[in-house]
Image 1 (tube, rainbow, N blue to C red):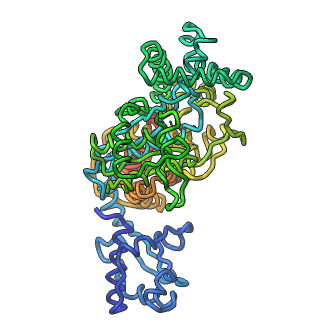
Image 2: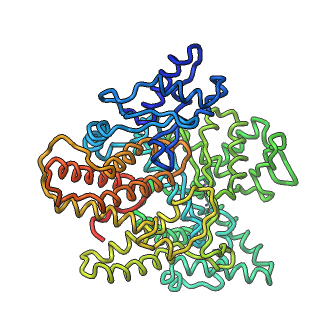
Image 3: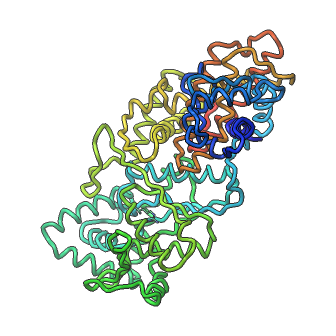
Length: 573
Ligand code: ARG
C-alpha cells in the first residue's frame, strides 16, 4: 500500500493537471514539498503553495484556492476527509474511516513487515562500522560508528537487502611495534590477562610518556613492527594475543548492545594483499614518488595527495582501505559499501574514493562515507593519547547502575532485574545518542539520558512495556469492524501510517535519528490515548476491541522501530 503522502502527491498531480492545463507537476516533486504541520489545526498534511508559484506562474493564494476546488475529498475509501485553502496553504485532513479501515488492518496484517522501506529489495550492502583500534581505548567516540552503523544495517535488512557487516579492526600499523616494545619492557602476561584491554592501554600510554624522554624507543618500535610485517613468529604471537584480549572487551560491549558482525577482517587482513594494488597503480601511471614516499597526486581535485607507501616502503591506512574495497567488491559484489566514521576522517575517504575512481573502477560511486559529529560528556572533550578518556564500558556500567537503583525503587519485585537494568541503561545511552541528527556535536548529560519522563530511552521502553501489559491483560479478543470514536485514536493511527516514510527517509539520508523521532511521536500519541481513553474498562465492545487492537498495532510497530535502533524490547520494567 502507498503511504499517505504518496497518495496525496498523486491526487495533487492529477488535480493540477486538470486545473492548470499544460502544467506538468510530478507527484515525486510534490511529495518532497508536503509537510506535517506542527499545529494540527492546520490539517494533517499541508502543501505550502508558494513552492509551486514558479512552476505555475501564479500567486500561492490563487494556486491553493484553485487546487482545493479541483481536488475531490471525502469520497468513500479516500484517505482525504477534507481539503482547504488557507493563506496559500493547501491543508488536508486524513479521514478516520481510512485510518480505521485501511491503516489499522494493514498494520495488523503485515505486522513486523509494516513500514519496510521500498526501492532497495535485493541490494547487497556492505557496512563497515565500529572498527576500533586494537589495544587502544574503546571510548565514547566509538558509540556513534557502532550504533549508527548497526542501525543502518537493520534498516537495510528491513528493506530486504542482503547485508554484510564488517568490523574493520585497526589491528595493524606502527602502534603494534610500540605495544610490543612496551610489553617487553614493562608488561607482564598476568597483569594484561587480568586487566585485559586496560592493561594494554596503560602500556601504550606509558610508551608515549617514556618516548618523549627516550627517543630511541620510537626506533625500537619501528624495528619491532618491521619484524611483525615480516611475520616474525614471536611478534606475531604477541600481536594476536593483543587482538584477542581487545576483542574480549569489544564483544562484551557488542553483546550488551545486541549487535553482531559478519566478519572481523581488520587491517591486518589486507597488509599482504596490497602488492597487486600497488602494481596496478603503477601500471596505470597513478603512483608518484614524493620525497621517498609513493603517493597519488590529487592536486587537480583540490585535495592533498593520497599516501600509498611510506618512505620505508610500508603500507598505510589508505592503502589498506583501497585493498579492502577491491577485495570486498570481488567477494560481496556490493551495490553499496558504506563506511561509518567520525567526520574527522572525511578527507581520508574522499581521497581514496577518488583514487579508486582514477583507477577506472566504475563502482567508485558505490563507496559511501557516512560521517558523524563529536561527543563530549558534560562539556568535556576526549583526549586519546593521555589515557584520559571515557570508556564506553564505563559509561554503560554507570547507566546500568543508575537504572538498577531506579528499578529497585519503582518495581522492587521485578524478576529479571539485571537484564532489565542492562537493557534500559544501555538503551538510554543509545537512544540519547540517536536523538539528534548524526552531524550534530553531542554533549552527553547522563542524568538527562536516564530520566524516565523526558524524551528518553527509559520513557519509550516504559511505553512499550505499557502496551505489553495492556495486551496481556486483554487476553484473547473477538474481532469486529473497527470504530474510531476519539481524536486520540486517530492521532495514534496518523503517526503509525508515517512509519514507511520515516524508514525510507532514514535510509535516503543515512539518518537512524528519524526512527528515534518517530518512536517519540508514537510514544507520545499512544500515551495521550492511554491517559484519555478507556481501553480494557471500555464497555462498548467495538470500541474496546478497536482500542486493544490499536494497542497491538503500536506494540508491533514500536517494537520494530526499537530493533532498528538497537533498543531491546522489555515487556516489563
Ligand atoms: N579504525 C579506525 C578508527 O578507529 C576506523 C576504521 C574505519 N573503517 C575503515 N575502513 N577505514 O579510527
